[in-house]
Length: 624
Ligand SMILES: Cc1ncc(C[n+]2csc(CCOP(=O)(O)OP(=O)(O)O)c2C)c(N)n1
Ligand SMILES: [Mg+2]
Image 1: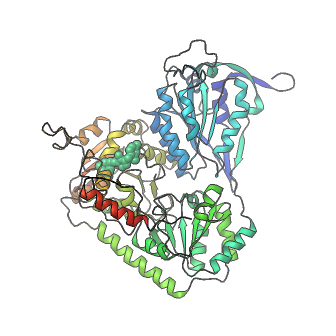
Image 2: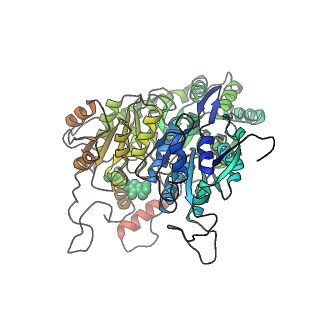
Image 3: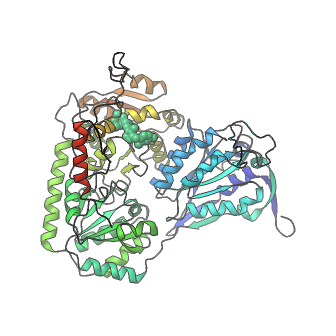
């Protein structure tokens, strides 16, 4: 860059840091910095590149940095932060070449699947190829330019590899465009060869001027709104299914208005839970495989289903068995055409808030029949009482998981945020937790990634420090990824982690037996010398000592009283409460179904029976 353009000579890494620091998003006039900082673990791949840049550029002109313990975790932090901020801001994550970078993959896939923006900057092999193979470089005998980072292609919403400094001029703005586009967002990956990071270039100074990315609110086509309204006006038993998009687009108030004016019940997916307060008369709770009675019964007979901002994953649709009315029609309100067309929906492509606004107007004067509204109230009342029954403490000295959830919810109230991702708790929380605002429920269930929980607690605390955060984690997830407790201590982030210890992967253990198999390899048991199987005694793990060693404030709470007392203690730093639970007092299913194929041939009676039940269940699956 010469001639009339003012330029500044800096390295690729320095340019990235200075560029990212100037990116903002704007919606309804409210502006915020988009990239709030950079999470990084250094190695030879990035310490002299991005590491040097982050150190040299003061926070005021660059990015605050964070130092986690595991690269996967840092992506979870960024995704949870973005989710809590309705995708209007996020973090960047840099990792060294090789294993540091591949550790980002799992978190990145989770972000893309959940439609959450995260910027990934994995390091890569030398662009000049001279020292090949550099430490940690993959070599193929015939594909000279193959890299482990190619594994980012399918999991990324945007992918690039920078082999010359000037490529940044096009690549970074494109990455930002994708990240800030609500229909396209996910993980944006820019691979940075180790040598290129340190290379200098005369970057035009205009590249580093403040940029504000307007987050679009695409209006729907009026014709499609008209058709949707016409369909709804013909409905007698309509049902709204609210997903995460309804919350991200801030459509909560208009959704409520539409529901109230027209008398349409609203049910929730994992990402949509909290869109209406649990006790709103038209909130009929969660739908689907892990849903509750009210929503599942209303879904079965619904004639028009309005899917708002949802991916319609198998859990939400009960593996496509939820809507059993032969004439059911689906209206898909979504910015992403992929989602709007699902279940052969009438696609109303547009921002959820704008679309619901337009739809409310088009439905003026229309209401569901009075007997339907009475039925909704009856179902809701019955379901609320069922939840009361499940969370009420009946065995104070040997708590069931549902009772633990009830007690934690009591302490958290309607506005403390509960966090979870995998195991048996997401399904139980979906049914039992009672949020009173849309940010009080944060369960990652698009990827259901064990290990998301504790990093997510960090992300939410960074997004909203005043918010009380309750991370609920199983012993299995905890053993898989617990080390970010150290990061929470380092950053002085106080939140509560409730570790439910049931000796292993009990969700899968339950599923295993439901498909007819005997108990096999899910519980945490010693190897039995006689059988050679992992069927001996439980392997004892002292979670109290373990979490204490990382600097957490830890309590063992084997009873209801102990749990109440531990929850009541103010959290000055990260606090872990270890709760052993009664395994077999499980929360039952409520007329949901989940497609998990059972062996078609087996010598076992129990498998054959499970197969017969499976085939019966499959009969309810609808082909749209
Ligand atoms: C990273 C990852 N690996 C495997 C799974 C499959 N999986 C789902 S739940 C689960 C067990 C979780 O155990 P725990 O956290 O103790 O919860 P519990 O099932 O006992 O409620 C496993 C292995 C997953 N969701 N994520
Ligand atoms: Mg467990």
